[in-house]
Image 1 (tube, rainbow, N blue to C red):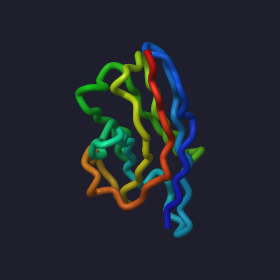
Image 2: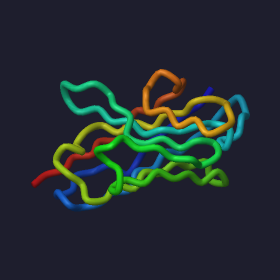
Image 3: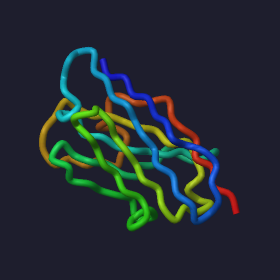
Image 4: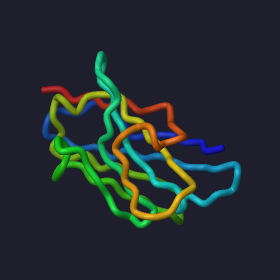
Length: 129
């Protein structure tokens, strides 16, 4: 059973930066390195959307609206997933969720929710003008 805990959200002015973190644990004993990981966000009244994903082989993918501004990374030694958010815009406001899929191997970087089987509780990001 995978447990995910996000942190690092907050309120920031447009143009600012944040770094989100996600702590991973698997009580079944599968290592973090065997999971593909993703960040999703959901704004009020909108569907959850995939923001960024990273494969077990560290290949990354981003939704078009965040390319060049957000960076996803993972530290397998620390069981941590990160999302660096730069040049934040008002439309980046939302609840950000960490998700894990697997265990699996390869280059999968899904930005759709369905392949993921574990989710965190979310951390709020609010961008103001």
